[in-house]
Length: 287
Image (tube, rainbow, N blue to C red; front, top):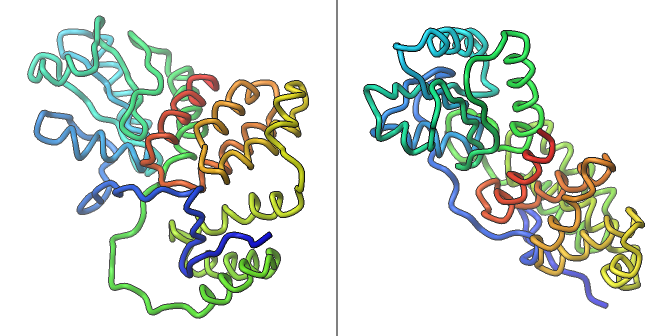
């Protein structure tokens, strides 16, 4: 049976990847704390949340709890690049506050990939607030694009990309892995190479399976290994939503299911709506 062919630059499994328009890059230096308004909410909150979680604090100067929470979040955000805090003044910009459906001030809503993933109402003790932020960055931020460097001149074509492609087309996964690792060592923020590298694990596993993993998994729902194999097969067949839905119920009890799910997310753009939906469900499960 002839295997899938690939394109240099990034592994091109048309059934695994779907081109999506990348989020607009932010100009200038990253600001960890901003005030959200109608003018900047789309770019500085929603689009920015494709890269790092954005913690939206909807508050008012009339509330001591809100004032205290605003200061605490600002202190946690200062000097870091793993998340952004966006303050919404409910008195000055009520239309923006209404976008988040708040009932109580203050309310905090975490946004990732343009969607809310978790929230709380009222103030929180400092230690508990820090734990909440740390969990958000660990469980959700790790699934986002992260902040890249300013775009510069396009680098010259690297012949190692062609060599990696040739290795994949002859199922020489070890050589392809070595080449992609070398490329990532030189350019660790290259999203295309990261995606290409991420596909190798799936391709390696699929190359050794001759039966029908999906049928086997459906016939034995309690076998986690079979569910993992079926998820690989479903992604390769162009049905990532089925693969994600298969693994999501397993993530709490089986860490390997969470690891596989995150690996499969890496095959797609962060802005892919299927990944956004599954990532939101995963974040809810983990919280």
